[in-house]
Image (cartoon, rainbow, N blue to C red; front, side, top):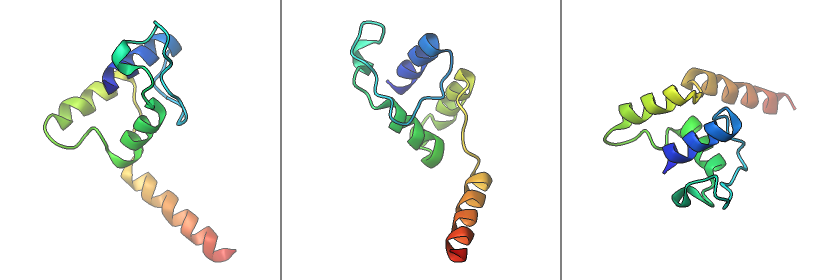
Length: 92
């Protein structure tokens, strides 16, 4: 369902950088099984937590997402961002 929704998002909007608040509309442009899916929050969880990449077929899912143009947050980059936030909070 996630891949179907992302493919449809790509067809309609030309990218898969889904805003975090995006919910799939109920109109006929979207497959029925994807309607009302909180696609923004789902893609956010994929990007930052690796959801949808755990378990069997995770490499296939990763490759499918990459082929759609999905961008992941690198773990090192994420760790650097957390460290910067930590330093900033200590300075305040």
